[in-house]
Image (cartoon, rainbow, N blue to C red; front, side, top):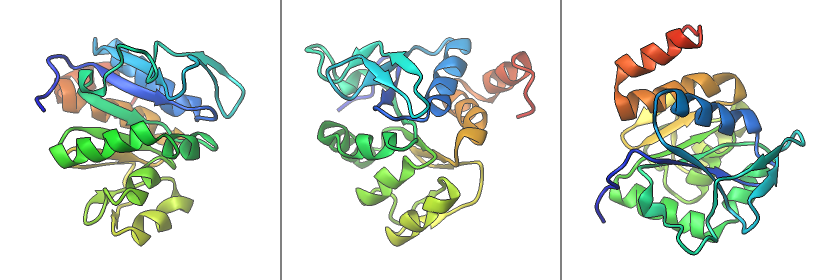
Length: 192
């Protein structure tokens, strides 16, 4: 499979996600001119976050014309029960396995890196996640790093809501370069 022709990003949205971890990425990518879709993992496009914020997604993986291959990057926000809901989505699990096998980019924050670990995709790879979930990564062979954002080739992981801006800026740097990430950082008055 070839890489998509665009830089379009899919932020996967499950009932109970941590909205800051998903929407911060969407906001920052928008500011950098990187197309981004919020994608519901169920047929309904309206999803409620862990803090009862209603999000109306752009797409659903159940849409007839939806294809993961249209996206350069797939992003997994954390949250409870968002992370277990993402983990239970078999089409998403199949896509994550395919992407990692083909060297395509995947990013996960907070508890969501545990999904990658439990699929066996972090074995021997550097990764981070929410501190109380790091044991899951270690138990599945990941090399656990305490950095706010850890990039290991095609995999980007981050620790949680407090690192969501760093996470989003890292994704911008990977797609459009460090100068663009620095520009966005200055524009939002953030020390990156």
